[in-house]
Amino acid sequence: MDSADKPTLGDRLKSLGVKKGIPPLSQDEPFGHSQGKPGSPTIDSVVRGRFLPTSRGEVFAAEQTLPQDHHYGNSTLLSSFPFSLISQWANDFLLSALPLSKFAFLDTETSGLSGGTGTYAFLVGVARFVDGQFVLKQFFMRDPAEESALLEGLAGFLAPCEALVTFNGKAFDAPLLTTRFTLHHIPVPYKKYSHLDLLPLARRLWRDRLESRALKFLEEHVLEYKRSSEEVPGYEIPWLYFDYLRTGDARPLAGVFYHNAMDVVAMAALLAHMNDMLENPYDGNVQHGLDFIALGKLFEDLGRAQEAARLYERGLESPMGEADFHAAVKRLSILQKKRGDYDDAVRLWKKAAKAGHVYAHIELAKYYEHKTRNVKAALKWTESARKQAERADLPAYQRKHWLEEIAHRSARLERKDGL
Image (cartoon, rainbow, N blue to C red):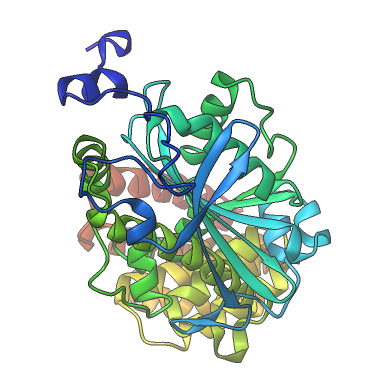
């Protein structure tokens, strides 16, 4: 279906019999009392919060505070170290210069997952550190007519900040909100902010160890935190909001507010945990061998070869699968070769060659040919590489590649040996 033909939220609401807009408040009703069907529990009776005035009307906002040393699973919300390595990884050195009070943690709940002008962010959770407290506000749109008020309230809360922290927010949350701000002719408050998206870093750190890098999965398997029974699955959230608009009954939304709040708090805890891993990996902040290896790869990419080598070595001391172990040995040996530490590289290659890895035989042949000028030793390792490639359980294309390279090397070495 062409995107222009996709039904907007307004189309869906009409099909459900929902009219846009909230009837004006009568003088007999208390200020901020949301309008549902008679007898329907309103959002302010279900979630603790208050109605905030903005230049575009009022918006309901739930608020809660946590101490900055609050523990979320095995992590606090606040790292003990500056974001020096994370800022280098993100290629944004402003991140290491800003105080944490300038960071905003943001997550949206929306009317759909596709984005575009027909998708609303009906609940936006955003938190920042204020006077030693982690202050979380959740701005809620009781009706699509309140969207501009929600955006004004959100912009006001974001005003003191200079950096945005999200989880997949560069691809989803920020573009979606930018569209909504633009449609309402409201300046985008975070337009010039630094933006740290935690999902790409999570993939770097845990893609080899964990089957998923979803935020909730990371909570359970990295932060060791389990959400309560209030949690609702993310895929149900748009339909819970549609039901609320149709019926006016806000009770099912309590779980949506809980889900959103936990996502925001989890981002702060995950950032603190990630930063502690990078800045101080040897003080119990890293528990798994594959996490040390992942950190080694990241440090290597950052040009910190000596630290990367130490992390690889630490990871290799930990239990891990055979394939992961030898992949790490290969990575470390190549790094040591680049650093000029051939003694360690040769030690690692001989260990890998004994385990049957063709690349290690080839690396040893290269070493003896080019570094020690020992042609006979190079021939010996080239021949052992050929035998290993012929008997190894390799895909046909890979075996063909190795055997062609080995034949070329063997011919050159035999000519050298005959001189």
